[in-house]
Image 1 (tube, rainbow, N blue to C red):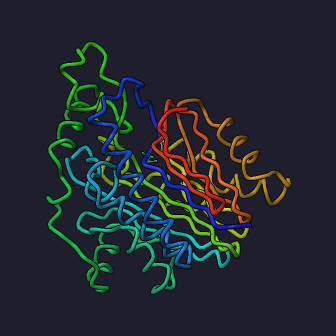
Image 2 (cartoon, rainbow, N blue to C red; image 1 turned 180 degrees about the vertical axis):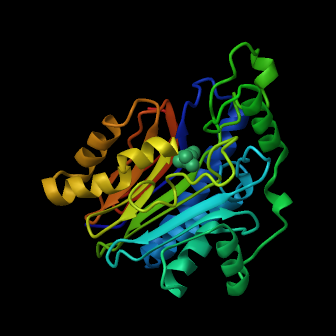
Length: 316
Ligand code: ASP
């Protein structure tokens, strides 16, 4: 029994040829966020605070598809979504369709703590953000040149894509060098448990490049992209529609609860049952076990445990 923490910056088809200028800043961001989370756990901050803190930091980084780095809808707008859940109480909060809120994860927490509801979306969520006085900015703040370029690429190929999809067929590496082929970023998430077995999970995303306006993915859906109960805390990433169909996060918890599987066994079973190339997850158990399986080429990820183990990785 001891504390542990894991975080991710998205799973997908991340080419092994990812150049250092694309890889290193993301690894540095993961390291920084891991250190932040570890320090908070060592300072005995509740896991719910820890996952919110870490996800806020990841949202503020332009290197990941959440907050500042959110990808664009087919109309060139940003619609961010996020979810947070406490394991012991199973209290949870979720938001979708945000276009001006700097930290979607903190608004999700306010939905959990300040409303009788679980999930607010679009105009109602934006109005709630103003009522609560959370930091908002002009929607244009989130629209980065990289994401305008990604949207162009996706439209050209007539597809909805996860943000690190490989270069579009027929294009030379040069043509894609600053866009989809090597500009890997992703949805973010964090799970944590303290020495007393208190668990929490948080996930935040801009969704998929060229998604329809109004599309809701797995991230804010309790049991799909995010879930925590007294057994484990899970945050998933990958193709949202596949993750929703498979209720990935809840299935990990259910296999532990109903079938007595260990965290690692349950997570591996769930990831194997999702079509290859579609998903990854991070999870911690009440006893401090940690696992980060994926069936994509890679997943930006990091973890640490109280006994001194720590890892930062992208590929297998
Ligand atoms: N799961 C997210 C979505 O479909 C995307 C991702 O994980 O990168 O909205």
